[in-house]
Length: 180
Image (cartoon, rainbow, N blue to C red; front, side, top):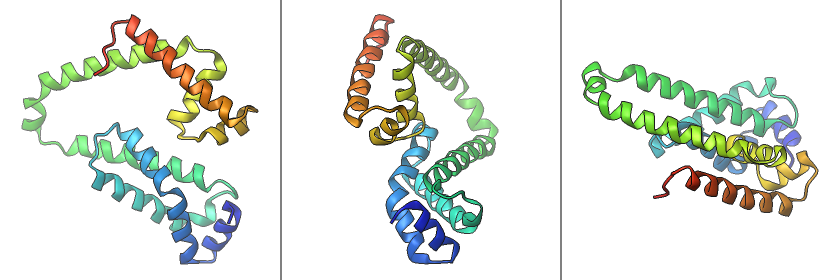
């Protein structure tokens, strides 16, 4: 069943269609949440956000454009994750926040430096390879989805991912980045 049929059934209140959407997209939604939270949320929190995302689809299915369930779910999952992380940061008691300030600052500084090095390494890739990396990691698209958009074969996309990862790794190692 394609997304258009699922969306039509959702709009009619078909709970089996919702179950089909969950079965098809739950791994994607959890991956988006995990990637956006950078592992700061527990698996239980990730599952709760995924459930909340699917519930939002159930409530708002009439506003979802035809054929864009996956994109809509990804967008909502990212937004809900960012909101959860902001709330968690605001809910932290002041004494806990102050107690870990030095460690937190050091960790944040290291993360920022690693992110800067990674951005620089990715910037050295060709425009097509940068787009493949962005779509694969930021948008959580599969090789066939990327291939369709960029006019490549899925195997070409996978090969470019392998070569791009290797180029990034080599550049990071030249910059002093250490893999654990």
